[in-house]
Image (cartoon, rainbow, N blue to C red):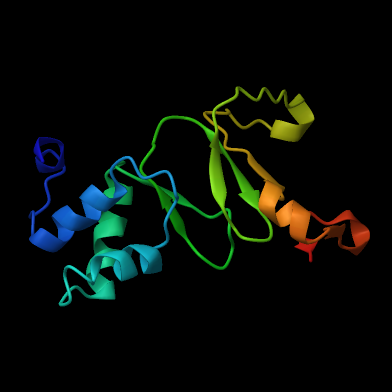
Length: 146
């Protein structure tokens, strides 16, 4: 509770519940998953409360907004530098803590001063791999088709 006070938010029961739900959560939940999980205990909670709280928490550096799944924003309370791996079938996301070194040539970074990076890996988790093979779309795209 004490670490939430430092965020400068009015600590309503709903906001506290959202922050507690995220604290240590490794599932990378979407706003919808958070909402559905908490409305059982807080039936008056609105989606707007979830979205607004997530926006504030993202802006204050308490969570990272992930765009690894284009159709849905996901949230990660682990703000330490790491990468992600997503199953293209079930959309499970796991953290990758291995160091990944990428050296860009001067032509590739075009004069940018690189201050950070985030790498996304895509594949199939073991249960999905057993269920269905995956094929690369025409043209070598990074998008996958089941």
